Length: 442
Image 1 (cartoon, one colour):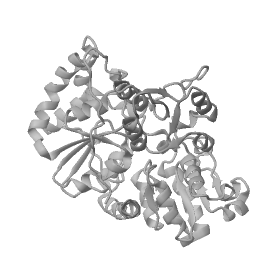
Image 2 (cartoon, one colour):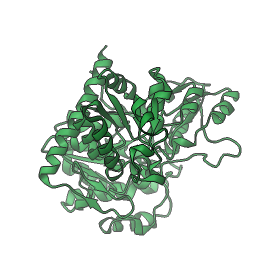
Image 3 (cartoon, rainbow, N blue to C red):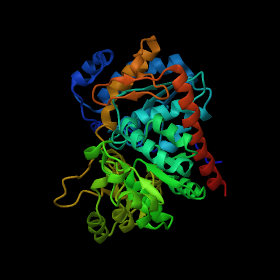
Image 4 (tube, helix red, strand yellow):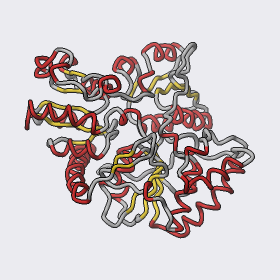
């Protein structure tokens, strides 16, 4: 079995150092959260010795109220110091695969609060036990890649693919998708994957002898194919959904139906807005400076090939913790992650830079703006409102929920629709877990 116990990141909040968290405008907060935001914005500074006493006023009573029934979760990419704050209050920080399993493996946790993007919280909800509740500190926290792979964009194309290939089509849904697309993977006998296990899942899927539909990240798809030695000419990327939406037919793709029929794996055309900025030139710049270069596999294929290593956020963080005094690293991933890695590395004499921080680059320190919508007022407000029994319904996450990241409007399925989705999406997630555990145990 994979060890899914979440270990401490080792990060600490140090006095005198400002909390690196961009303040959001007051009108970005839900009405119920505005009193907390007003207090936070009125604080004289963002130093821990100022912020933490304020945060303690709301967080500690909630921790005392819920006791061992409460579980706080955060992803490594959360803006600024949220990962440190969540850990300070006995929460857990990890990558998307390990986070997804926390409700399933912790049945004693009744209230789960996630400072992460919506698809991560929804995945926890899909795998949760019936008595568990999953809440998100900010339902508008999203992912640019997932926003370009909404079900209303993907399903019209998937319907055309299913009409043409029927049972010969198998969908692999990256974790960065809604439950509705994870259900599509389940319906086609497919599986979910994460950046840490995608190569195992694709290898398993190829053995089924079917045409693969990989949704949504075309770069991860290409990198996994390259890792497995697949013929890159047998990959076909669908049009960019940002420009084409779902307003095209299969005959309109590059090479037409003939190319589509010849493809072993069809890639949805979306991508991560953070990781696409990394280039081979950046890799060579830092290698010439004597650094080992590590990147996330959502980066372009040419960049991953040029780097010294690539892997999930857990892989990257483990590399930081394993580095020895005097080591020099350049890391290509989300900016807040690298900033935290730089702080941790400096404690032990390890010099870390962000891959994009080269002369003339406009992408230096690029962080995920949508993930960063989780901040101290959202954490304080969510826990305090839950303690009072006044948590806004919009922050409760159920399987199948679809939230507009701009307006905050939510489309919620009927109970019977949700039950069907859970069966399908859970089947895809359980296939991922089975494949991953099999490889971990071998």
